[in-house]
Image (cartoon, each protein chain N blue to C red):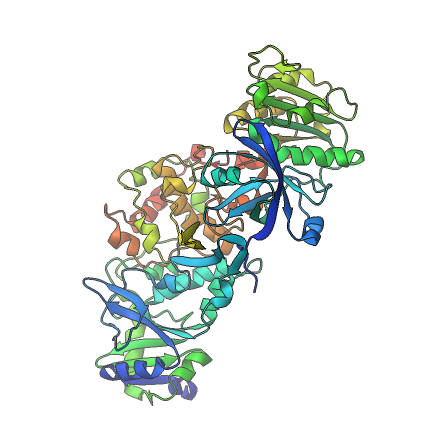
Length: 277
Length: 350
């Protein structure tokens, strides 16, 4: 009989700081075959398990188009993450998943992608971004809009700065404040980047948004103004979760469970469901 | 008729102890036991007698299928030594004796969540499969009982393997499933008079339930009432103690926690309650259900709308425990009546 709560053994391959209290983790299943055959969809998440401390869910930041290693972008926020941050490279860890309904990448084929992220919202959306870049021929135009508080808070800064000037992606990066005055890109909120994107073909665009709760209202206003259909505006949302399999009740929103029917929701869902954001 | 008569057995009340002694050889026996000032279901200890002169137990016997604390993973120091608890679950068969029909109904409600097409909770299923339930008809319902509102009643037999009716100094025991029939085959057959007396009690039983609520159309109506001011009114005096969810036989939310003693540890499922703010508090500090009325709304909505949407049945069995134990006398029957009395205007609809 199977036990859905049993974590699989994995190890931390590599870790480094992305910003203050935000760390990048590369994780690999100890079983090589499992590591190479493990499939998932951008937007899905895994439960991390540290015996004696507990479990917590984290979005996968890597793309299934690069099998072998799973990548995560994790902010220290509680007991589990504090313990996780004490672990060293090659230390063991338990993982189970993948959970949730990721981005509908098959439905999105042929469409332009407008990826909008704020702060830690880069964690789940980097998966979709890298997936689109690895399967570039499957999608139309690719826009990335990313806003962080300050340059030092921008996650994957080096990686994203490399995208600037490339023809296969339009990458617009902004920071709220640039105290040092050395930031090479834009300043202002992420919404200020909308005026810099040219000719959006709204009917043929999927907008994918993730950021702090306060960001959604303003970004959604912009997207609606652009006439992007509500079912083509996708958001990946957060909820306290425990089981990951739709039973424990923590992430319940109306009659659905975020861990099963989310965390990716459309703007149409948000308008028709309560307490979603 | 002949067949059903053969399934109708009886035992003198004072002989029950001997029967239990016999059954304990092969089964774990769970039955109501009288403690200081309340009754609880528990595994009968050596020479412990069941207490069947009760209205209902303080706690619901759901814990014998959905334990308050249940190991899901055990570990020793590092992850590689982890073991699954599942294989260790005792295979010894159990009998729950004297379970009230409302509580049996609640297990039928929980079955839909834990054993369905998409998901089978192996822990729950193993406990279900290993257990024979002997229901116990309610000759005298409590003032807070309203089981008849949910297609159930004081002599509702679905879910029972056998069913006990108290008549005078005897228990009439009806075998329902093959397992139940087999267990009582050695008892004396009930005679015609006993069966007739039993029929009389059952016939008028539903009328003895002192209260009821009309739940027809409540799920549909609630769908339009998410933003109605009623939730603030209902929750005004709620203390948020969570006792209603703790005692509720259909509440099934759980937390997962790790416990470690001397390098050995276990990961456990614990009952949790949607009435506590931490239930939804994010690691980031964001709180999607900030106010008590939102949590009260979640509890009522989950029982009377969401569960019905997902599983076709309302998650309430009318046992009345949330009414008798609420420290501020919140009465779910009144809540349902208030919902029923609400006149929806366009602005309340989504």
